[in-house]
Amino acid sequence: MAQGEKKFAGRYQINRKLGEGGMGEVWLAHDLEMNEEIALKILPSEIALDSRAIQDLKNEVSIARRLSHPNIVRVHDLGREGDYYFITMEYIKGITLLEKLVQLRERENRNFQVDEIIKIAKPICDALDYAHQCRIIHRDIKPSNIMISEDGKVKLMDFGIARVVKDTLSRISQTRIVGTLSYMSPEQILGEPLDARTDIYSLAATFYDLMAGKPPFASGAVEYQILHEMPKPIPGVSKLVNAVLMKGMAKKPEERPVSAILFYEQLVKSEQYEKGVDRTLKIEKTKGLTNKAKYMVIGAFITSFLIGFLVLDSFNGWLLWKKEPIVKEELSGTTPGGIEKQQLESNETKDLTITDTTKKTADTENSDQQPSKDKESKPSIRPAPTTVVPTIPPDVTPILTPALPDVPPPLTQKELEKMSGYLKVSPSPPTTVYVDGVMMGNSQRLGALKLLGGPHKVTLVSQQYGSRNVYVEIKAKSTTNVSFPY
Image (cartoon, rainbow, N blue to C red):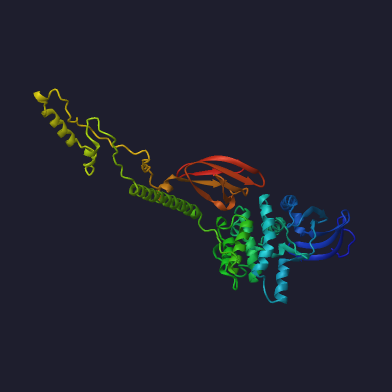
């Protein structure tokens, strides 16, 4: 196409070429009908010869048009002019990350620094997370597909379109197009089903390239290395940042972060840890330790509380016993049997409680003694044996020490394990999980939650579906699954 041609497809005024590669040419054009500047991408002529490629391209453009995000380049339309298909899209006045890397190496003899990567990672991960929630996978993330505008905005472009072009050219030429092989995930190379985690791999490989100055695998048997080897750590970059990148480029998808936002958070925390800003970095390793430690702390607290209660209660009872007053007997006048008060006071040192033996002796003496004939007219002055019951003075209040309650022993760790089950919340869509009013975290990072058996109130909060409550019955040694919506 000649620069300065008046019209293309009867609507677009061609101004100048922006770029050229194996996937086609990109021109700056002016949309005469909408009166705005656009980027016009003319695809290779081979596309028009492949009906399968044309249908795939229509599908990808239709999907890309649904995306509306400030960090994603908008796709306008797909058209045809003669033997060429073309795509019109939003024009971004700026450069790609690949071009920015070349500038840094030429002008400053360096690559991207960690803090620069984190600055551009946030909008990229936001855009990817939005696309993944729309069930759209990019499948071709690389430095040349990420742009930085003159005002500093980061934009992600070519959702799925470049893959269609590449697959078509590979199928027609019977050779593999290796332009983006260095950023492809193992499952892409093997032709396996893809999900959002394949974009996580490509994004980690892109950040590796920008900080190391070259892709993770750039020479030799690249396919074999992607499938069986791990990249070498980037010199001059901290171990934690390298660890986050290696986790993003794990060979198995299930070993990578489940979302772009989680990948970004781990990257930020690793950089903050190195600077001493945040000492709470937690890179995903094994799930379940947090819940186990939580139950151990609860068990220790309950045990300490019960022991403290028993010790305090025993000490209180001892104090009351030490302070208990001695209750003495008070008698006024004479006893019903005629014994004077003075006679009783002489025996104060003796125990006031008459034992069974004393009772029997008194009864025997009373039965053996009979009144004589000469004294029958005189009343007997010998008192009948009586049982003296000590009285409590009115000014003394009896203090009773309560009996200790029967406190069951605290549950052991093994007993807690036997009574516990698991709650698993579906990670999609991203949902904030509350159990019995306590926030447990985001469903994409929780895994299986260990809970004591019994009913629990689970509250799920999602931006897409709002807030809902569900009551679940946790059974010991079993897993209960909850999805949202349900």
